[in-house]
Image (cartoon, rainbow, N blue to C red):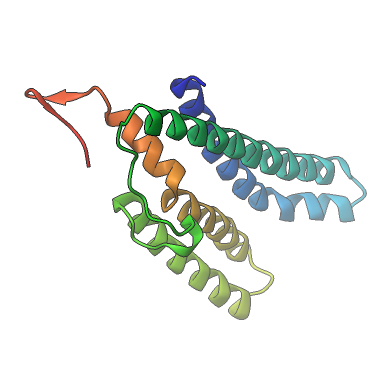
Length: 168
């Protein structure tokens, strides 16, 4: 499997996860139009949500399967594998600087969503925080996981700084 294709699939999955999260921002509008008799925005909202969800996790599974195959090849060639722990990404916190930012954003956005849902359940802010919370929870799992660790290593392979190879 080509490493560049896997990296594209991985980042494509992250983009699809973002698009799925953003679909929550369109849902109140679609719901209002449906109440007025226009069902098209509601259908668009549903297709947007489900298509980006399925595409995002499909690409993620494709990248994960490819990473595992490349990892087996690395073990056969005696090249070191990226160390990312044995627990799944959803059960890890602060495993790298990007994951730290996602973990903090996750906690803040979930708390803001809960507060906005309790204080102003009919407001649009609730949808903004819901969208942010859904994306942040997904990024918590992705950025703490083995795939991100592996693809972050790929980006630094072969790049040098003054004759020294850059690795984290």
